[in-house]
Image (cartoon, rainbow, N blue to C red):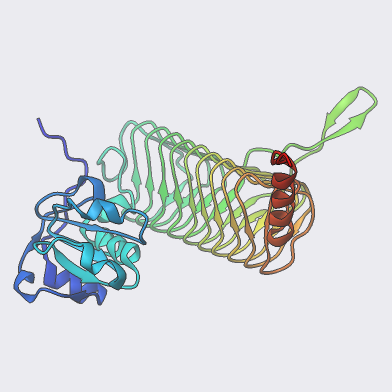
Length: 346
């Protein structure tokens, strides 16, 4: 049996793709060709739409079999004549635009089990307030005085603790736990996300290490997406906040009192220590670690696997361990490489 998890929501022709994206179709006689699927360059076939970004994979064009391809002006001559060429400055961006239309469920998950309404196998406290068209799947638990907005899906085995509020058209994945949190509209929390557990706060005491009470909340603003098994600790005395439109990858740790700005991108395995403040539109590569109480400006980029020990001003690019500005980091790497080169014999 052919098992297809994503089925196109509609049919499109090459001409429709060109109009939608603004790409220039070179061969008008191929305008009516139907697009049957999307594919990577390496596994494309008849009727598929693919793309190529830059010259890195241009040798793959020699034996290309596809219905149509997004490509830039510089690669036109490499594409076989029987493939419809859609010329654009942004091949991957336009390809993704078509994908969002053909496969809407791939970018915004619906019910995990295909259910609608309130499952009889879910537990919903009598004091909880659910607006119309909320889906609560089997095994989910909705606590006392919880509020959930219309169109939101709470997947199987998710647990929403008392007094939490979740906005409209949001998605709570399977196995997610939420406590001490206020969550906005159009938020996606993927499987296994943990929101609002107590932060890692301890202090030396007479009997050893003693717990510092964690009394704050987590505030997640609209259009935030948080990847699988990421954790967001609640604040100690103030809120942990994630700004509007920020996207966080899988397996990220966000400690108590952290404030993350709007439209940030944080890749997998990052660790953000307590009370860090991150500005708007900042990007952290995979496995970046931030020491506690740092201030990272807006528009900052930090290279993967960097260890940040100092504040970073707005708009700067840093990398390395410990992290420093790119130019300084590259000079030091080049100097170390020169030291390691063998000395030529005279």
